[in-house]
Length: 160
Image (cartoon, rainbow, N blue to C red; front, side, top):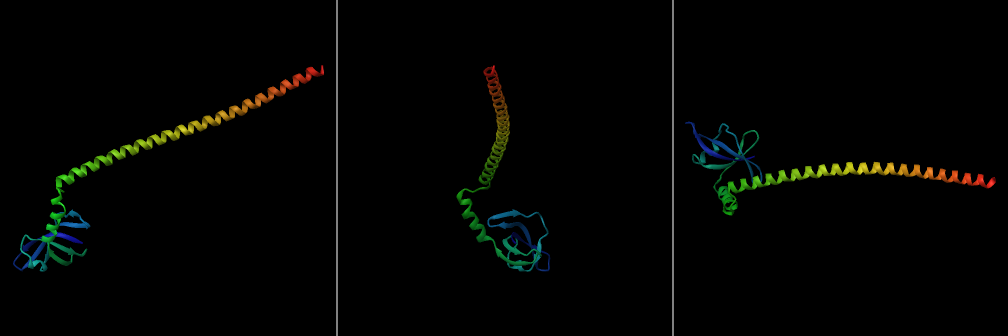
């Protein structure tokens, strides 16, 4: 993993330490590192105290490489700060995105509620449709019986 670190002089044994400041998560995504003990190494002796470096450190804490961070910092300035991507601008953008996310969440909840209402209404309509079909069948049967009853009466009158 790559870390942004600051070189610190330690003791009279000639060892220097790296105070880790941030770690690269992916691409241009970095996260601040909480206060930790400096990593002691002789590899950072080539750098003056207070210099910012980029250090590739294994998960076991072994340093693979150390490079001065000047070019990296200049690249950041050229890429972001010259285009107006200041921390305040980025915070404003993050706040606006959060507001959009909350608005979309509310809209999604409202659409879900409406979908549930429509489904309930559809179920009610289907139940009413079934009830009407049963009532229609019952009325058809009654009409058929009335017809048969009327035919039977007319047959009885004709026989008399």
